[in-house]
Length: 568
Ligand code: DON
Image (tube, rainbow, N blue to C red; front, top):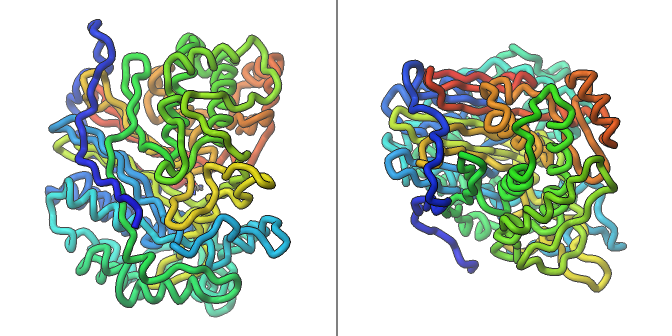
């Protein structure tokens, strides 16, 4: 048995210097004081209903996830995992919840290598039974709801059950993913049985689809809690799917029953007049904090989004941050992760000096205190994820990123939902010949590294300022960093910050929505050695957020997706 961390939430101590700091934002005034921002309006409505019935943000999160799993099956669901950052307005404590999938006891560092020791083709690995970890989203939500819920758990699944049983209009993005020839998970026998019509064509946006198996699953989970998923007939159905050919996995009933979510104090660091909180590793949150910690040593606030220098600083901090996280971050229950070292102010001040007047070659990882010797990372992360933010009338805040990993996960279904392929988030190559293990190598009962980084920003008095997050695989860290810089440095309304063009700077590669940048910015960047490469992946953000303003809460939805933000 692994040690299970279940720490009482601690109030984040603001030991941040004695000088009087300006207040970040006035307290919320007129306008909405409760809000749900999520990637699909049906999920938003389910969350708003729960809040209006007197439920807390934790209660609404359960309802939102239950509907998202139905109407965004390509992104998240009952078979997936999640990270959540939770702000308790009464105590001003920020807690991180870890619902990351866990590798089975039978997993090995070599399980994604073929007989000749070469990494399996990604497609084969994703569609295999080996890619599925014990799902954690529902168990994590049950823990959060136990800690912060006001309504009965069993009453939070009504919308999901009704939409699954009576039918729901297929959203554009679900139809798009189902019809996308590059989404090979949508062509598996299970996916075709669900997503194809009798004539063989895929479901279209607006078609009414029923999913009675999903209705049964949520009924069971509503009645039994996470045991309804991790034990009994649903667990048996999951295990049977994982053990099916090709490339069966080892997941057992014991692995499912042994799954435990984790709670810990969030990882919080000051950023200028704010405090930014994220989950600790294996989440991508520490990388977002490192990016901010590097930018704190620059004058990015003086160079707004129309100024190439602002984006230049952003790009250089990004690649320094990615170099460290790629080498060092893995599951801290297994790998020594130098989180404190990477966020140490002296380390960051030194590392920020590597940001010169023009972009040099790709930066190497630094040597933060506590850094072990590491094999180079060989993790590849593609796409299928969702982010939502909920603020309730008491001022409690949920910021949750939730995922089945790739679109439609492994393409295998049980109980009306897709199984995750989260274990392909491990590094396929565990070590160099005879060398040290990669931080993110597969190990039994280990959780794969994630880029998901649900953030909550407070002022120095511990009052809520903003919450946001995004899907996007490794680009999540860049998307979140961009939106945080937009709100905190460039003082943009959160909607504008979310809509800013995306740029993902890793190594020598500057992927970007280049056509969205002003030509002067593109040219100015090129003159500094930053050549933007138009990249489809750069459009993969799904940023959703909420910010406190003098006019009340303001929601933000990524214009690249089909989400909504509703407040009251
Ligand atoms: O945890 C992670 O970092 C990935 N499994 C997330 C994948 C993702 O965001 C895909 N998004 N579109």
